[in-house]
Amino acid sequence: MSNSVRHGAAVCIDNCSKTFADGTRALEPASLDIARGETMVLLGPSGCGKTTMLRIIAGLEAPDAPGRVVFDGKDMTAVPIERRNVGMVFQSYALFPNMSVAENIGYGLKIRGVPKAERAARVAELVELTNITGLENRRIDQLSGGQRQRVALARAVAIRPGILLLDEPLTALDAALRERLRGELNRLLRALGITTIYVTHDQAEAMELGDRVVVMSKGRIVQIGAPRDIYFTPVNRFVAEFIGAANIVEAPIEKGHLVLPGGLQPVDGVADQAAAVAMIRPETIGVVDPASTSLAGIVESVSFVGDRQRLAVSGISTKPITVDAPNTLAVKSGERIGLSIAPGAIRLLPADN
Ligand code: ADP
Ligand code: MG
Image (tube, rainbow, N blue to C red):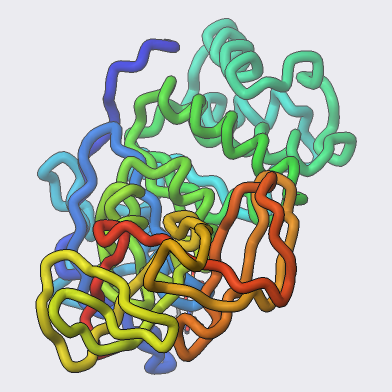
C-alpha cells in the first residue's frame, strides 16, 4: 500500500454557507474544488470558519440551502457521516482510553466486520507507517502526546477512507515535537496519496503540508493557491501579514520609484501611483554600504535568532522596516546602513484594505 498513486475522492464544496441556530454566520457562501489525492490546507485565524467548513465536508453540519457537498460527482449533502467514507483526526485525540493502541487502530475495521487476520495485518502495516512499533499493546494513558496523535492518525486511515480530515492535529503538542510530526505527517500523506483536508492556524504547517492552501478570514475564502503563490503574491494585506513576516509600506510611486523618507526605491510595473501599498519580505532586503545605495536608515535593534538576525531599521518608512540579515553580518544598534531591495521582490497590494 505504500505506493504513491493518488487516490481518494475528489471533493467539491458548492456554494456552502453556514448560519448557526443562534444566528452566528460562521461561513459566507464558499465554493472549493479539491482534486483526488490533493492535500488542501484551510488556514486562518481562530474563529474564521475552518472547523465549520471541515464539519460540513464530514457531514457533522449541514450547509445552509442551497449549498452542496459533492464527492466524485455524487451529491453527499444529505448523506450521514458514517456513509461518507471519511477519516477524521482532531486536536483532542478522542482515542478510546480502555483499549490498547492496536485495538484503537483496528476499531473501525472491527465494526465493519473485517476478519481478524486481515485486521491484524492492516494494524501492523499502520503501526509501522506511523512509527509506533513496540507500542501496540500499550494503553492510551501510557502514551505521550505525540504517540497518541500517531495512533489517532493510524486509526483514521485504517478504514482506507476516501478523504482524510484533520483539524489542528498538532496544536496540542510542544513546538519541537510539532515540527517533527509535521515532517512525518507530510511523508505519510504523500505515501497514502489520499485526499486530505487539513485545518490549521499555523502558516508554517500550511506551507509544508499543503499542495494548495485556502486562506480564510471572517468566514470568507480570501485566497486559494500553492504555498509559493500565497507567500510571494498575496492578494491583499491580510494574506501578506498572516503568511510569514511582511513589511507593509505606504508611499507614493513617482517615475517608477517608491518615494520613501529613507530614499527612492525602484519598483516593477507601475510608473506613478498617488498612494501605493507595497509588501516587502524581510529576507529579500540586503544590507549594504549606505554610500552605495539610495535607501538608508538607522538600525534600531538587532535580534540574533540563530539561523539569521532580525533587524529593525528606522528612517526608511514611517514604521521601522524588518530586515532578516545573515547571522554572520557584523551590525549593531545605532549604526547607519544601506538597504538593497530588488524591484521584483516588491509586491504592490490593493490599497482598499
Ligand atoms: P475556526 O475553526 O476557524 O476557529 P469555527 O468554524 O470553529 O472557526 O467557528 C466559526 C465561527 O462560528 C466562530 O465565530 C464560532 O464562535 C462560531 N460557531 C462555531 N460553532 C458554532 C455553533 N455550534 N453555534 C454557534 N456559533 C458557532
Ligand atoms: Mg477550529
